[in-house]
Length: 401
Image (tube, rainbow, N blue to C red):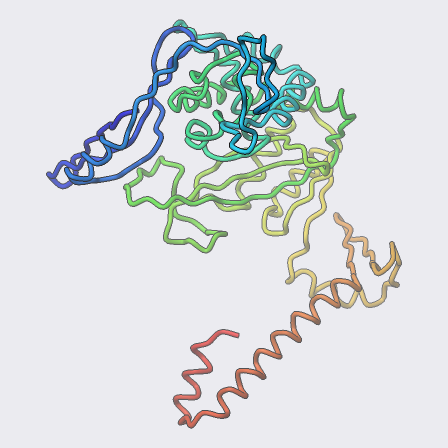
């Protein structure tokens, strides 16, 4: 191990950032560096202290020996070592079972056959297929960033032994470059996985759940108009940060069927028409049932779905629901299961269903009671204070209930 310095010039001044790194020798003889500890900016005395602390360990030759508890070693065995069991400790434990199961799932999905021609080894010998399998196992077992895989997870897993590879597959730049190679095959991969899911699990794709979310970036770097990271409606209550929108389609069993990443300022209602055409192009025409929030479809997109022969289950806008109130009053309640009753109203183009859940009614009443209790507690606390009228109004308005 040794100290490595990274220099960065900011506002005309050069800053030095230090890290403790170690050399890892790969199977082809090359050496890559792995960051062990990030130190940040340190002064000269701290730097010298770290240099004295770091020790370089060279692995020597080893031979297989027999281990026996202290006092029980055979006298005639020269390749035996006595072991103090009370001082024995476990070093570098690795996760095996989950890694082995991920390799079995990879084989069951026949992903080697799909990626073999699309991810051949590089001219330098980088096994892109094994890099991808490591990334997939990591996402399945303990999802996190690629940097975390490089820094911690790979050494604590058994992927090197199971795939017969070395640390080269977990080098950080290799991981990011592998992800870049996957984008061109996204549509083909979706079709392949749908076919394999159908063969293995008899999965059906007649009911699709469509929803949107967003993720934000905490960065002060200026972005261009063509960058996907833009300001928009933030579901995370971080309107001060740029974001991207993530649109996802899954089956009722949870299988992801397709995804897209629109710009952060994309309106929810504008994402659906493109998805409808994309799903039909990839998987053919079918009488699919789409389930989504009421803020996603527009009247135009619903008309497009009807022309495609697709059905939909969408929340009714409150404005339209109030117009149908009188028509619903004349309809009888029908019990569908314990605690759930519905009313059905047939319209010209759509069928409206009004649902009533006893469990939901109890939950909402409990929410209102808790809020009312907080109001009462606050008013009782203010009652014991000597406040003027204006002070009382300020305190009531300053504390949300």
